[in-house]
Image 1 (cartoon, rainbow, N blue to C red):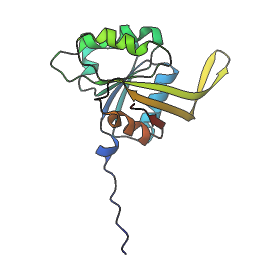
Image 2 (tube, one colour; image 1 turned 180 degrees about the vertical axis):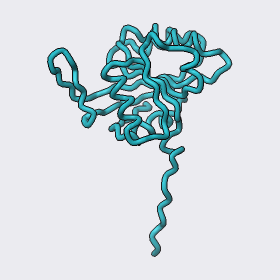
Image 3 (cartoon, one colour; image 1 turned 120 degrees about the horizontal axis):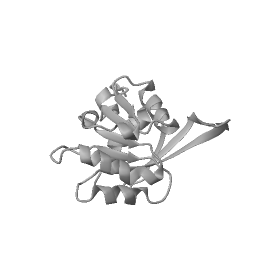
Image 4 (cartoon, helix red, strand yellow; image 1 turned 90 degrees about the horizontal axis):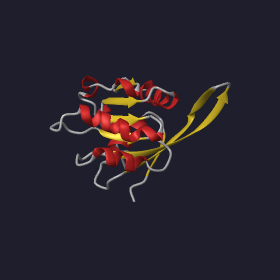
Length: 172
């Protein structure tokens, strides 16, 4: 019996999206940018403060990772939606806040617009040194779950996995 020849996986399979915007320049937002771009030069990741969201930044963005505090989710989603024309395909928003109520805030802000939302819970080892928090990227895990069942979770999960995030997905 002949061994089946394995074909290399194309970069398009590993990166179903190429343009990511991370809103939140703190430790978690910076950690996500570093990890997503470390071994992958095919993906463009822009990291911005929540006050610096512009229409120009949102052009062509396929995924937005919201790395801001829980209580700002509604404000951030509203700000993004105000800057995206109604006739443009909505980017997937990944909510990585740990806590209750973030999905409800995002849905409340989205009103009648169909907003693809993926819930991401981040788990990592944290050490406090002085006044700073230090996150251990080697211990980073993320659990992903779509907010609506008709969303393609693999589209978001695959690049996180390719970037060496330990990911778990939940669709039920």
